[in-house]
Length: 426
Ligand code: FDA
Ligand code: NAD
Image (cartoon, rainbow, N blue to C red):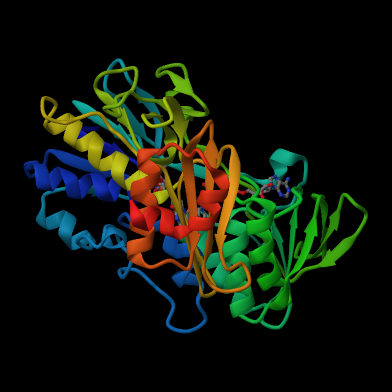
């Protein structure tokens, strides 16, 4: 049993949706393109799962957040794919890939062949078992990567109103889910090994701003330790967690957000990997010229850093996907992928954006006791990163544009004095 396509997108997440839209803009013909996804639904905006999806009132539900609404583009419902002659092969896991033969074998036993393959398999949530803790498949322990996870989290959350939640991890998932749990009237403790939240990005000063607000909402931070074991009822429901520092936290609900691993396993030994992802060039092309990789799974050259990086963020997924399609369909006119890293989050009524990299010395500006403040990072005499909380669209655009230019900075105290005025004036 088998089918043949000119273009196959493997994975049906954010990158897949944006790639599909770009294919139609570049003029793909009916029947040439398919998307294979183990998820049972058409591609959607994954960031909604830790935000609008978890709201107690008027929560976001599909079809409202199918791609590509997140970038103010068309909303690609299953009907859209049908109208554009794009085959959606859903609920289907690819179990092996043969790069030499240009074929994929699905778990259902079907062989799908391609002329061009775009790998958009994203990543999986890490499990506590990988850190020596067992029991994370219990009915009230939740992860958050896909719609099924988010649906389980909503169910467990609704059954836990007024109760206690323990959030394991102080990164993006930890911070966004903790905020949602508070909004759902659940008492939250957050446990993570670092001295402050968002350790990969925030400085202690920035982290402290958000932590103080969380504390004012009743969130209990337990830092510098990790979980050692779950405590269960005889029926297997978790009632609490033991921590390595010897303490115990009661729990009606546990959310685990301890990072991800890119889904590269189908291609290990067949394609070159780097930095945990599938290595691509500035055309998003892997070590095999018929195969491209985009989104969370791809390690690509970030031109302004002069090195290969793997970025786990939605903007990179959207833009790398579009670029790969352009490179396939219009190889002679598509320039090198030149990407400025961009991360953001929205929690409670906060909203921040970050551009570039957090390397070197942080120079702060704005009002850390108010609603708008930020920081620049200066490395080797150049501004290399910018963070802004509570900015306007013009201000966010300005920090993005200036960060891309990496302007020389000779006087740090002058930069501090000018604050946001520095980017608004350029
Ligand atoms: P993505 O994970 O979206 O899609 C991968 C797809 O491949 C999935 O459908 C998967 O099932 C499928 N797949 C994998 N292996 C397969 C196989 N063998 N066979 C078939 N299908 C397979 N970023 C940001 O910048 N701002 C934000 O606010 C957020 N918020 C956020 C919230 C939550 C809850 C999560 C989990 C993530 C975010 N992110 C984010 C990160 C962002 O969502 C992420 O970077 C993108 O989804 C990456 O897009 P990809 O298409 O690469 O992977
Ligand atoms: P993360 O890497 O942001 O944070 C992981 C956290 O878990 C860190 O605080 C880390 O120290 C902690 N940790 C690691 N091992 C631990 C252990 N054994 N016990 C306790 N804590 C441990 O990852 P995440 O928060 O799980 O997010 C997953 C993915 O989702 C990331 O790719 C992220 O970019 C994406 N995401 C992004 C956003 C956003 O950009 N706004 C929002 C949600 C999710």
